[in-house]
Image (cartoon, rainbow, N blue to C red):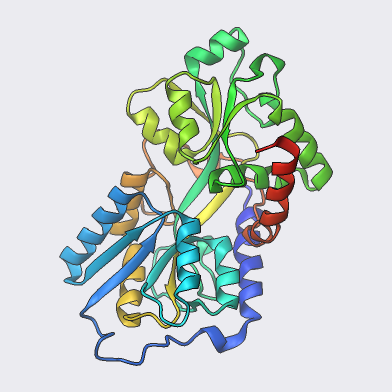
Length: 345
């Protein structure tokens, strides 16, 4: 595995956050009695509803603390968090590591040094603002039957560039990166693997010529490829593993090099139950919860003592791009505007 990816992801974000100083480190909770081990914890999460509910129930059964779950898209949750600034309803919020920097600067999340053992140190934020729970890999799903039909039985692609086949015109599907985090991760991956904007846009121009549909959601391409409407589609690995597990003829391709997103949770500044939130966020990083996340979501674990999703390739066997979550967040608005202008989405 190309470990520089993970050093950049953790190191760049941590450097940015450490510059904030201690201002965002206080819990903001005034009612110590209410924030003790009892009470309830409110969790804002973009995780699919069923896995989130199962995790909340497991924690309550083990700890006696109720977890109230609000499941929305990442964008909706971030907007809600900002709207509730000063009087937050949430104790814990799910987010990608790249979202933590701006939220910390706005003092919407707080630093906390987790004491959980067993988490791979490559996925630990030294500044303590984000707490990793899973890794989400950028992949391509291929409908084996449609691929054979469209390409005459050509070998499956091993790199992003091998997808640029004239016989695939109109046969690719991907999420709209101006609406979908999955789609944007694909676009950002191209910028990071090429190393310069001009080369990235040149690839995206060629890729666009083959796209038959841009979907509004990140999960849609896996469904459209599964049913054979398209020969191949850009998707996160866990979406494709879920569809393949249902019996559809989908092959997973991990193009060299591909991107990975570190996903986890953060503690909300000034939350109603700060101590309860700390206990919950630590439980989510434990072995039991980590295995539940892998089993329910089919994402990759951040612990080495957790089994991989069935049918997934190990991280050590993959070629990963040096994906910088801080830069990805900083350039998102500009890249999305340019993408919409170029391709009319």
